[in-house]
Every structure is written in C-alpha cells, then in structure tokens.
Amino acid sequence: MGATVATGSQSFSNTAVSTAATAFDRWALRRIQLTVPDAPIQFSLWDGYTLRPAVAPVASITFRNRRALLSWVYDADLYFGETYMFGAVEITGDLLALLEAIYRRPASSKALSGRGQHPNTTEASRANVHHHYDLGNDFYRLWLDRQLLYTCAYFPTEDCSLEEAQTAKMDLVCRKLGLRPGERVVEAGCGWGALALHMARSYGVTVRAFNISSEQIAYARDRASAEGLTSSVEFVEDDYRNVSGRYDVFVSVGMLEHVGLAHFSSLSDAIDRTLTPTGRGFLHFIGRNRPAPLNRWIRRRIFPGAYPPTLQEVCALVLEPANLSVLDIENLRLHYAATLVHWRSRFERASDEVAERFDDAFVRAWRLYLAGSQAAFTTGWMQLFQIVFARGTSNAVPWTRTV
Image (cartoon, rainbow, N blue to C red; front, side, top):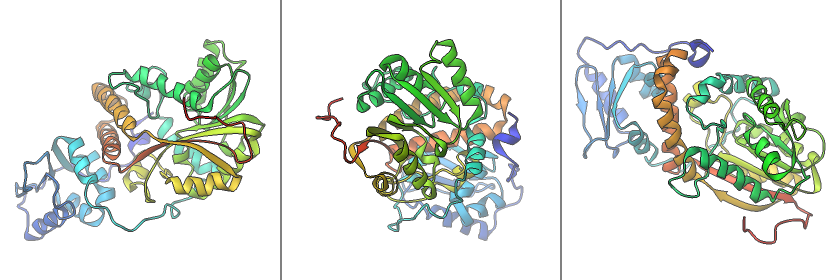
C-alpha cells in the first residue's frame, strides 16, 4: 500500500517560524498549558519561549509554527495527533509518560454518548476495515506475534513472551467457553484466523469465521489449507450481520469496538438467531467505564468508525434484547498495557522498514497511536472486557467459575 492510503493528505507544515513569537502566541501557549496544569510537561515556542512545569518535566513539546499552536487552542484532541504526525510539533523526552500525564488530567463529570457518530453501515464498515486492516499483512508481520493476533494477550506470568501470551489468551477464551469436541462455533470478526484455527486444532470444534477484510481472509484460508484444517474451519468473507446457521457457541474477539452503538441491535439479532437453545457466547472488547466518543484523531487516522462501549451499553443493547444472561465478566486492562509494551518495542525496531513502506508521517502516527493506547490502559482511560454469556433460559452453564 502507498503512503497516501496510510496517512492521507498532509495537513501541517513542519517548517519552523523564523520570527519571534508575539504576546498572542505566548498567551495561546499558556492557555494550552492550563489544560494540563499539574502535568510534568514543558511547553515551548519556535523562538525558545518556554513554560516550565512546577516539577521536573518528563517531556517537552515545541511548536514549530503558529498554525500548529492555534490548532491546539481550537481542538487539541484532534490536532495533537495531526501536528505530531507531520512534524509541526516536536516532542522530546518520554512520549509514554507525557501521554499518561495527559490522560490523568481531571476528566469532565459529564458523560458523553457515542450515538452521534456516523453509522457503520455495511459499506462504511468495509471502508473502515480496509483503511486499517488492509495496510498489508507484511506490515503487521513486522511487529505482531507469529500468528498475527491483533488483540489483547493474556500473561499468566509477567515474563511470558508475546507468543506465549497470545496462545494463553486463546486458551483462556476456549476454557471460559468450555469448548467440547464436536461443537459448532461461529466467530464474528476473525482477524487473520488464529483463534478459529486454535479452537479447531486444540479443542476439536468446527468453526465458521466471518471477516470483511479481504487480505485477512486470504491469509487465514491459506493457513487453514497449510495446516490441513479446511474441513474444520471455514473462513467467510462477509459481514457479521449476514451470519447464518445455528451454533453452540458465538465468539467475538476485538470486533465489538468497530460495530458502533447504532448497530448493537444488529449484533444482538445475529447472536439471537444463530445460538442454539443451550448456546453460549463470548465477547472480548475495548471499553470504557463511562460513555465517551473515541478521540477524533484516532477515528480520522487510525480507526474510523470505532467506539469503545461501556458494560452498561453492551448489556442493555446487545445482551438484554436477546434475553442473554451474563455468566462472567473479567477486565484485562493491564494485560493490554503489557501487550502494547511488546508491540511498541517491535514496531520501533522495524520503524525504518515501516518508513520505507509508507512514509515518516505514517511512522509517527502509529508511534503515537501505540503509545497512546498503552497510556490509555495504564491510566484506566480504557478497559478490556471479556464477557461470557448464555441463553437466559439455559441450565447448561458452568457450575463454578473455575477455568
């Protein structure tokens, strides 16, 4: 894929202003600093004018021109990312610590809804998936684990490798569901197919896995063929809304964030019409403790159409309409932060190759996205929920929580 697909048009210049900053420029810088008044961040203008924090700074932000400066006054949530990715601001020091300091600033007490976003129609969903997941399998191979799992890993011990932790995550999912040989499983949003293949290979089930990323489906089919699992796993290039058939188990790992509140009822319908009377299911998703839309820059450059829901929203809009009972909820927030430590390290080692494939702006955008994601999980800004559920009338449920 070319750089234009990866980053879109350049919105800011990285050229530094040669003239001295004005009183208005200094006022704008102070206004930006006041949005994070206690953060250990140093702010500077192009001529060297600097606002220092009360404690030793973890990082410094330097604005290279007035347009970048004023964009932050207008909408810092959007233009932080835009100015950073195109070099209009320079960040020196610890990027992760800087982002954690920003995420720790006092949050508004007003809960915000994600209902105002553009609806993820079938056509919009395909475009969104293409934007992110069809950047090329070779790109993701540079920094994901060998099986290309692009969701939160599970670390039974802190010294697990990424490969070990991703396999442990797949086993955790299967154990929570109590998979038994011969059962029929449907997976909505299967990525590159690792979980579907693992379920068939290690637990003796048959799987139909749905995904609308053409590159991911092609890769998954090739892998199923190479491993002799085509009779046990069928990879279907189609939307979750078109899932058909009857299954003992419904699984979705890392897709719910891309559905959007407006289409939660469609997901609920898909689960309801496919699960058997004694069926059970599993949802693994990035969420929040309180409703709020995803950062605008992330939606523009990284994950268009994404929305991390709260537990209340998932229970009220997905599970309750289909009379599905919650059996278990677990939060793996810190496991996602640990996963991102590995992803960021691998990405940085491959950054020169990534720049050759795309461009420098793409590298900075993904560096910010990955660091911001880690900061969001370490500070509790984001959560990682796993929900196990079953038909509300079914008694074929685990007697204990032990997995």
